[in-house]
Image (tube, rainbow, N blue to C red; front, top):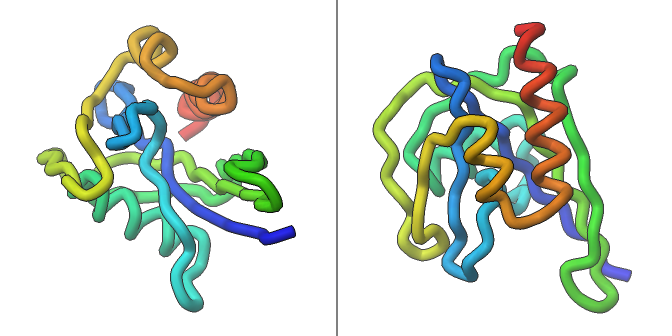
Length: 133
């Protein structure tokens, strides 16, 4: 069985809106991508958010770390690690090679837009944890 790992972030702005991307494949999710070389999880998450959206982030406390597991294809186990993050820049620019849309959404809007139930569960957990930052 092949093991894959990706990292990303659930990014909130000062209005507590969350950053969501629509991938070219059509699904809506949080920005994320594969770990490269000897990157840490936080380095990967920070790089991937920047690459996909142009947003710089701050991960204030790595205790707000969330993991999901799934099989994207036969014989592949994938782990995706997300961190709760705040934005430190505002102008979004999508990475055309992977992303078709980017937006900041309220909790309610995001719950309607996110494609996968795992993402909706992470949104709920991160939104509750946001109150502790």
